[in-house]
Image (cartoon, helix red, strand yellow):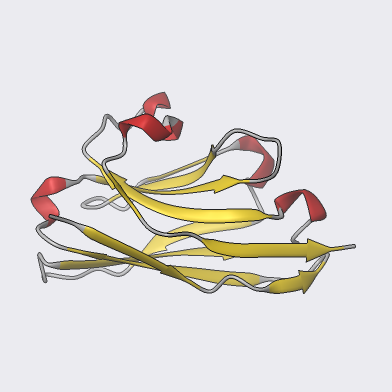
Length: 130
């Protein structure tokens, strides 16, 4: 089994920065992709960014490119992985509950499909005020 835990959400002013962290605990053979998703009122859950566990290759949704950076700790500990989402130049439209997820999925356009991820955290709230 895999357990996912996010931290780092907060309320910030537009233009500010936040760094979210996600700990993924359990056998890493159960997942090859780690992703960040967000859910805001009246919207569907959307993929923000994803990273390959082994290579560290990344993918982003267009609206966050150049502002958000997903990264990971490199580790030989197969029972724990940590990823981050550095968010700069935050905008009010970035306000959402942010979720970390892990799954065994292709590293292509599928990365943003929430239903393909097997393991989810409880979410951490990011609120950006203008």
